[in-house]
Image (cartoon, rainbow over all chains, first blue to last red; front, top):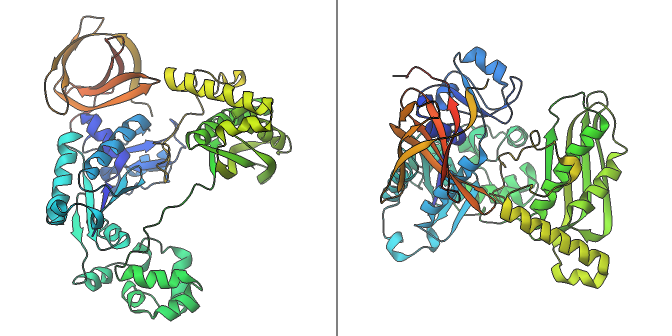
Length: 400
Length: 91
């Protein structure tokens, strides 16, 4: 069996836990202290008034008078993430953190002592541990099912603070209450594909013939996977290799000079370089993108014969590509791709220059690890730190 | 937008060091202006690693306002770093 644990409105709840005076009032978390910034998370009190993710703070204030907007505080959320992970590890060595606020426990490979226990009891025990070890305002949803999909679906049935189990006995009844788009993985495009063959409800999707799903609806093995997934067979226990590492930044003002934009790009390159090396990777490709107010989206990419890993090398490629970028820029991003395992000591085979670059980069990383991030950084990024801050990485938990 | 005042004020703190999951519990602190704040609840304690140095951050309240106080485990000093706006309690 699989258990899915989802912290409710995670960042807002953590802030309400940390600041008792914010409890029971509408709170939203944003990444920047401006009225036009998008909301990252809303508390349940704010959601009840119609505030949703992606809305601007200005719009939200109209719906929720007295709304409190707080800037995200990543170290706080990382602490809660690690606490949740510690609690989950008590029940199985096979846990997967799906993102900063949700994780999965695989009970199929745990000890007999744990397997013999009732999973509903374990679910309530986890909720109790969260309250005792983080704080009394913390709530989570627990879902139990035979595979990751059904466990996640169960975790979404009664928010906040619910606990639900989906088994073969209540599978049909549960799916009958859900719209197609309420199933994880079915959004507008997949819904349209299903509608084309007359599938409009989750029950019709469950009853669909696997050949129709595979040959007509999804036109690939994905159709067969959906057939199995809906019936509780595990098809999602797969890990994915890192394909790209990147960062993007919406400029804090839209009238910055070209030099100032380049400084922010340099800051992003340092951040991406750090992430790349933290995963023991080197890259061969760089992609730089920009969004211009007058000319829309722009991108340029470049592949190199030899892999690179240092901030200096990434910035050298990126700045060269950026020289072709349009003016009027409002957003920039850099992505390293064609990743391969870092060669480490073998770099000396390619000559002294690469080897010395490796030694200097290692020394800088060591100093930054010891004395704090950005103790040593490029001189022209001296003033960018107050703008280009490290934010909460959604989706990936690699850098937590 | 901003409901917090950012500070960097050295404070005197009375704390208890006991057992359990949160062994260090600040009880009250005195600000440089002499005002004494009695802590009624520790909302959250989390570490912030600044290189190899760990600063323990305590978000606390005295039921009148929320505060952030930080304990530097290397220098053994306490600082008041944030004072939040007062809100009327929601029943």
